[in-house]
Image 1 (cartoon, rainbow, N blue to C red):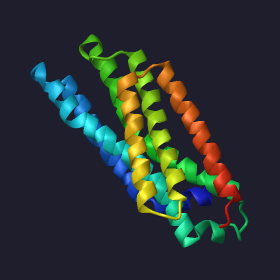
Image 2 (image 1 turned 120 degrees about the vertical axis):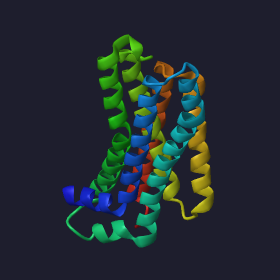
Image 3 (image 1 turned 60 degrees about the vertical axis):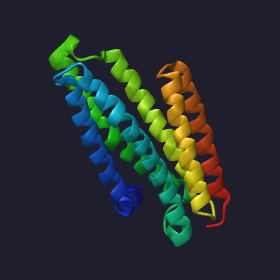
Image 4 (image 1 turned 90 degrees about the horizontal axis):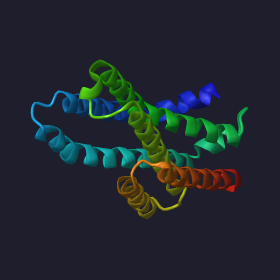
Amino acid sequence: MLTLIKREIEDHIAYLIGAGVFSAVFVGILISLVYGRSPNEPRIFVTGLTIPLVAMCMAGFCAMGAAQMYTDKTRKISALLATLATTRAKILAARIIVGVLVILTGLAPLIITAVILLRLFGPEVPMYGGMIAELSIAAFLMGFACYCIGLQTGWSPSKVAPTLGGLALSCVLVGLFVVKGFGLHTAIILVLFIAASLVNVWHKFMSTSL
């Protein structure tokens, strides 16, 4: 299993690096929000940088899922691995674990920074511990949902149309996040969507000829 995970990381290291870069940018934005010199400066950062970067980040998670499955299908990677001492279930599980690792690479530094700033500055930081936890859960679910979209579109024989459709659906999910906020209803919708997507991916991967 560890060998499969290592292989997935090596094959898609660019996404792991990209997640780290985006995380560093978001950390910089968060610090700028805290140390902003004027009341209007944080608003400029939020509206001018954060929203486009979030959309790009979610699209990146979707693209990674699609790349994992499309590369597998075109290069017959799973077909080769299945001839060795492993199973389809382990191959898919390793793939999803790496996807989660990339998502956490993008989110964990930002969450840690937010918690540290909250402890250092207390009321001066415009957020609370409960809000950080709520945002962190919502962001992870959103990223994982977009990643699941990519897993489904990447297994299609076509490359362009499903990918564009997946990116469009990712934008719809981001819009849902913005419109409905970070509450329980949004979390339930995302959890149900993720569960349905994983079941669909599992069924396709286990039943389709490699």
